[in-house]
Length: 411
Image (cartoon, rainbow, N blue to C red):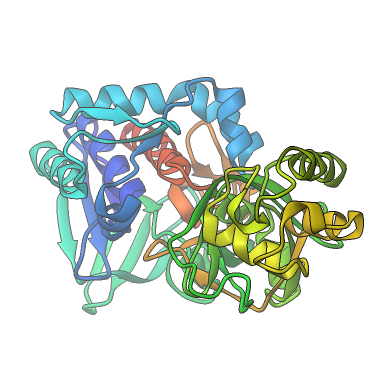
C-alpha cells in the first residue's frame, strides 16, 4: 500500500479511534496525532463519574439517531456501518469487556475509565501511531488543489501531511479546530452549551440536595420543549437525565433566553392534574382522619411531599377530611404542574458538550471528508452533532472516527 502522511489534530475519543483505524487499515501510513493539552482522552477520563459511559445498548440505527438533537439524519448511514454493537465488539477484541446497566448505558466491567484510556493508548502505540501531547495544531495551510497540508504546531514547528483530520472537540468558533476548519473554507454553526443543569433558588427545593424522583415530566413554558425521566435535586437546583435531555434538545432555545425561563415540573410523570386531583380525593375519602403529611398516596420522597403540601397552602398537621376541594386542586397543581423559575445553568459535572460546529452539509458522511477542501476530514464533536446523555456522544465519536480512519488510510 502507499504511505500517506496523516496528521490528526485532537487526542480525544474520535481522534484516537481514527488514528488506530487508519494505522491498522494501512500499516504503511505515517500517522501523527497532536494533542494541545497535557492530557490525552480527558473527556473519557471524567465521563460517567470516572467510569466512562462508552456507548449505549441501542443497536437499531433508526432508533439510535432519535437520541441526537443535531446530526441524527446524517448519522443513519454512518451507524449502518459502525454502531454500538461494533464498538462493543471492538473493545472486546482489545481486551475490554463492557456491561449494560438497567437504563441501557454501557460501561467497562471495571467501572474505571482508565481501562478505556489504557486500551486506546496501547492500541495506538501497537499500531504505530506517533502521539505528542502539549503540542496542538495552531495553524494550517492547504497545499495545492488535490490535498496536502502544512500545519504549524504550538511549539512553532511545521509538519507536512497528505491528509488532515480535525477531531478537536467542541469549543469556541474563533479558536481551536473550528478556527482551522473556517480557515479551510468551512462554515461554522456557532457553538453553545448542551447537557447542562438548571439553577433554581426555590424554598420548595431548599436542603433537599440528593433527593431524586424516578420519573418526572418537564416542560418549558412558551416552547415545545418537553422531556421525561429521572430528576435529581441538587444544591443549585435540578439535574438528572430529564434535565440533561431537555437541555440538549433545547440548547439553542434556552441560550436565546439567556437560560432564564419558567420550568413546569410534573413530579408524577405523565399524570394529568385531573387524575392527580381524583387520586387525592380518593386518599381523603379512604383516610379521613390521617394527617396529610404522613399519608402520601404517590410514594414520593417524604421530604418533597411535605414541601409540596406546604406550598399548596395545606398545614402540615391538617387531617385529610379537613382539606377542601380548592386545596386538593392546589395540591394537584403543585404535584403535576409546579412552576419553577430557572435563573441560569451549570455544566454537568466535568462533562462539557456543545451544540454547534462544522456545518454537516459540508461533510461526506460516508468518509467524513470535507466537501469543501480535499484531503480534510472531521470526526467527533467538532461537527455540529450532539446527543443526549447516556453514551450517545461517545458513540458518535467512535463511529465518525472509525469512518474517517478508514478513509484516511485509503490509497
